[in-house]
Length: 265
Image: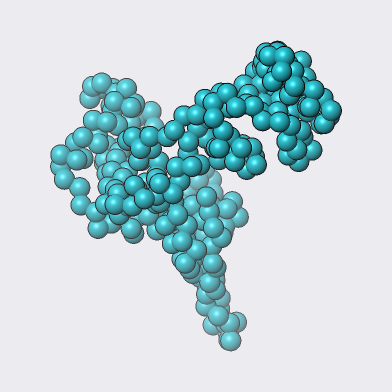
C-alpha cells in the first residue's frame, strides 16, 4: 500500500493509520472533530468577525507584533494559513453554539440554577455518633468556635481548614448534604446527620446565588452543545474497510464492517 504518512523511518499506509487510531483510542476523538466540522460548515463568518477573533487570539497569546507572531508560528511549526484556519474554526464553533442554543439558555439556567448556586459552609465529620452529638451541643449551647472543634476533632479533609468548605456549587457535596444546605438559612446549625459511614455536623455560613452573567451564559451554551454532540456521536456509524485481499480469497467475505463508536466525554 502507498504510504500516506512518514514518521521517522516508518511509513504508514491509510490502513496503518486506522489501526493505530483504533489501538491508541484516538478514533473517537477524530470522529468527534469530524462531526463538529460537518455541523459548523454552513456557518458564515464576516471579515470583521475573523479580524476580531485574530486580535483576541493574539491578546491571549501575548503576541504584540508581526515579528512576534512569526516567531510564535515558527516555534510551533505552523503556517499563517494553518493558524487562520484554527482561529476561523474556533469562531465558527462559537457562533454555531450561539445561533443554535442562545434562545434556550434562560430556561436551561432556571432548570440548573438549584445546582449552580454556591454555598460556604462549616463541616465536621466523624465516625463516632456520640462525639458528633457532643460537638453539636458544644457549638449550639456553649458557643464554642466551630473552627477550633473542627481542627481538633474532624476526621475529614475539612480539619485542615477549620471545617470551612467552599464556596462550592450545591451539586458538589453529597446529595443529602446538598439538600440540607439548599434549605438552610445562613448561620443554621444542623444536628448530627448520618451520611454513609460519617456523622456530620454542618452549618451554613453563606448562600451565594448564581447570576446569569456572560461567563455563566457561555458555560450553559457549552453544556447544551455537549448534550447535542453526545447524541450525534451515539448516532454516528464509522465504516472501517477491511484490507483488500487477493480475489480468490474474498469469496463470501464482507468488504467492510461497521463500528459504533462509544460515547465520549
